[in-house]
Image (spheres, rainbow, N blue to C red):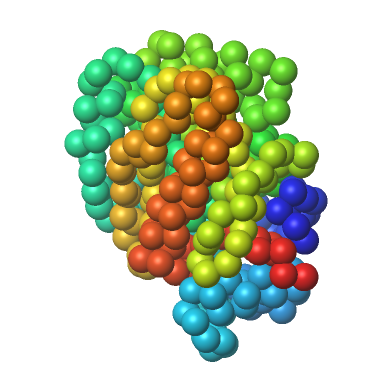
Length: 298
């Protein structure tokens, strides 16, 4: 499956099973709910061929050798754990987690400046800690660019836990998406987005990534060039148990305003972003959650 049709992957797991997990999580707590992650991990490992093959290919790259069975299961378990923790993040139960913030002064200074910015991440770890933080702490006016129709049932189910989150979403691909983004940053807001997946028909550039060539979208770089606002990288890495490391760093790759020079600059900007994604993936290898053929190997 190529990077321009990852959206074709259907949701896995039946609605009743998801509702059961949600009920157990909210009624019995995180501990009992985490016990379900073991059979869930096994289920997806046995039944999710596309994800299983993609995980094997990725782990082979990151480790430089064929992964063991326990490493392959751990990768899927890590993903399942972050999905479960969305229930607690979105319902505001931060007390359950040990969240360690690195570079927090960067995001606080940006919020204090009153100027808007882009918060850029990838499908690495969890973005929900930051997303919910923006709702719970009013001084972080965060809105998220997202495809509301992808994994629609899970998204609707989790949003039901915290209706305030519906006001923090800017639908990606809408006719007024760019206008909403511009209005948000003009009012001093922060717009969060994930820049590693290529939408259908999206323009791409080839980047060196984890020892191979992968296609990354240039839309993020184009948006940054249009908005003329600071870009801050943010990665919420799951470290096991109840611990998350939330990293912030300024992303200062230049984007010249001269249109004739912008083409090459967009590629260099995107390559610099890919290098930072690789840095965080290598520091937390089981946090890579693109379960499709990211390098066009099939």
